[in-house]
Image (cartoon, rainbow, N blue to C red; front, side, top):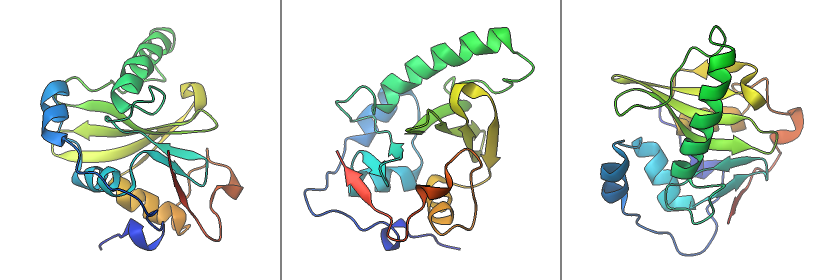
Length: 170
């Protein structure tokens, strides 16, 4: 089934960019998922319902820059992993597989892709890596199903999904 985020989150008027994806992908050794690249090119960096913030490798804001967040999240995760190795079984992206961030929430939850060879899943970690949940789907499908209430993330508040969802470009 095709999922179309544009039907659920109207695109704000303004200039949409064609970003230099090849350059950034070559620099960090990661091919971003196609649905994510289309989302960033269409919507830019910003947040859904002022709660779920989509990271971008092109952001000048280090709090929304996926490359900068990767570095800081990886450092925090590895530190926690040393203390709780039985709880934190996944690893950060190493050039072939692992976690790479694409979103954060106001509550401190973190959203990742988990690259597993040819397979990709969404992993959401609750604040401070207390718990996680995985979804075998891409980002656009995850967001569409979340906004339609076809799936839920137990870490997100009940009032996150609105009658009229919106995306605020920063």
